[in-house]
Length: 163
Image (cartoon, rainbow, N blue to C red):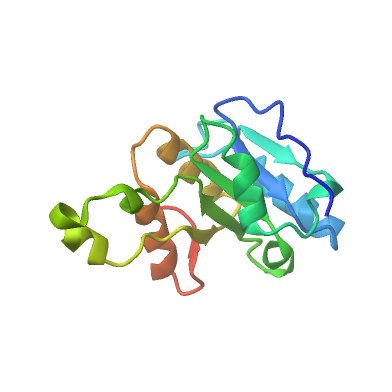
């Protein structure tokens, strides 16, 4: 498989959305249009999104995207517009946690309870309108990934929408 192009030109405050499915252009345009809407309680924030829309990313796995996205040290989360996104009524994007598993470095003698707990959730789905909320809160450390994942899993469709 051909090497992936570098993700370049992203402003450090932009959410990163990588398109990996190219079967339905109308679905992709609907996702982009949804993310172009102002967001916040009263729509007070303008959207800031960096779209990677390059067919070189077609059919790439989440792990392949994560490996490339981890090169950006200012990034804590990446959003994938994958096949499920394009086929879903909700156009829910796959949200991937970029951070490495910190439990690997823990000394089991002192942290056994934490190590024995359930492994951290590394992904969930969000409606396009939720991208901004997730990205902004994770970027400033206001919330952690697990809080958004728990909200998504509590939804009947297992999609984060908004608090």
